[in-house]
Length: 115
Image (cartoon, rainbow, N blue to C red; front, side, top):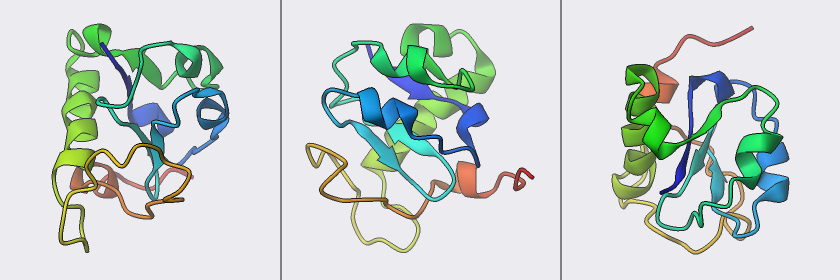
C-alpha cells in the first residue's frame, strides 16, 4: 500500500505533509506534490496532516475514478520522463536532496489554475 495526493493539492502546496513524512518520499512539482509509491512506507502521517484532505490511501483511490487518475499520474511522475527532462525521476531515495522538481505531469499542468 501507499498513499496518493489528489487534485485538491493542485495550487495549494501547503507542505505540511512533507514536514511529517519520516522517509522523505513526497516530491514537489510545480503546482502539486507527489508521493513516490516505491519509497512510501504506508505510515499515514501525511494523510492526517493534509489541510485540504488531498491525501488518501491507494486502496481508496482505486475505488474513486477521480482519485484513480491521480494514482496512475503519481506513478507517471516517477516512471516517465517529465516535460523538459530526458529521463524518469525514478526512485532517488528522498526528495530533500533534489529540492523542488519544478515541473508536473501533463495531467496536472493541463489543469486550470486555481485562484
